[in-house]
Length: 81
Image (cartoon, rainbow, N blue to C red; front, top):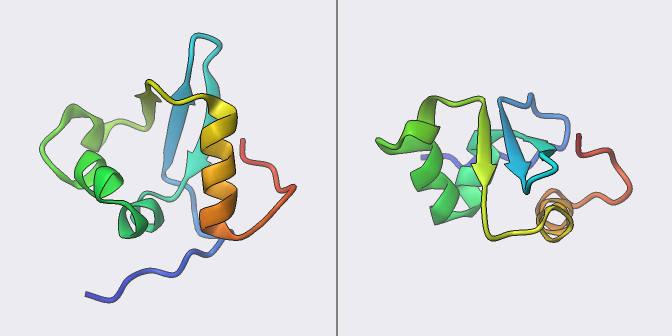
């Protein structure tokens, strides 16, 4: 299987929601899944999140995850929401 590129302009097909204030990050599921077994399982296994557009993420702060997304996609200062 060819792994997708981490194109920061790839269409967003999922929204990760963080914390009680519901801060959101729009993501491309295939790109995240190609970089993380956690997201591969979350998006493509038989979990209810597989078919959800907005997916709550617990135990991780928004800013921490935003930094990971910036690192994965290789951009800084771009809007994540």
